[in-house]
Length: 359
Image (cartoon, rainbow, N blue to C red; front, side, top):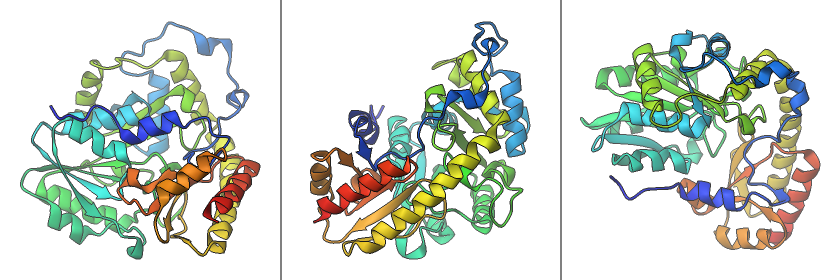
């Protein structure tokens, strides 16, 4: 086994979770649970949920255009990604991953003792998925390609044509593609092909992961899932028996209520995030040392700091109860990631403190 036993980024994030005006928060604030209209029945301890509570599986399947047999429940997107990787690769396999990249997407295949290499998503290309770079980096031992859509950290979306081409490449070269779609809910029903809810709709070569955390504001439920071809889904459910077996049933019931009230919950979030994205863009454009490619959707963006010094900037922000996420966690040390999904007054004050720290 590899020496990897943790995600450096996740440990850093946990140790910096109590910053009042943090711009490092990548999702939205916790929602008022009353919006889910919970009842006392939601807290029953008795359920047939060994492989997932059927009403929740059906709601997820309906929302993303698959069958319940294609849905695997997991404790958040992190566990979903772990289960997916562990079901698709073995020690010594080659795994190809996007760069810049969310650190846990690298840590898991390295923990599984895979050979890891990268293909670049370039800022000058709008962080687009370049199929030529992917094809060039594929080897005979490549079993898995990993990417995110929306891209974490930039917020860039992958278009339908690129996903179709990647599916064709995966079929011809015999590998699977894991797509972390935890931010893609922001694009639900939006874009050039609203019928494509998930990459799983395009090809069985795709395996996708999501949760109710980043968009719905329900991190406390740890309600995540995998969408996969049926035989792979069976393998993942069985593997999950080594980790968590089944989800907390009250969490399953509350998650099902979130799907029942999805548009009500998301409409409020989308309106706030749209306003906040404009605030973020105006701030960055006002700072001569900063540049970003404005994210197409979602709650995060990746900012270049001219002249470097991101770690020193982070220390100055910490001294003033604020924070951004250092780009070194994504493999780009002269950048930092900001989040803008929080309440507007916290965002405005966070940018005020960031402006002071930039000098």
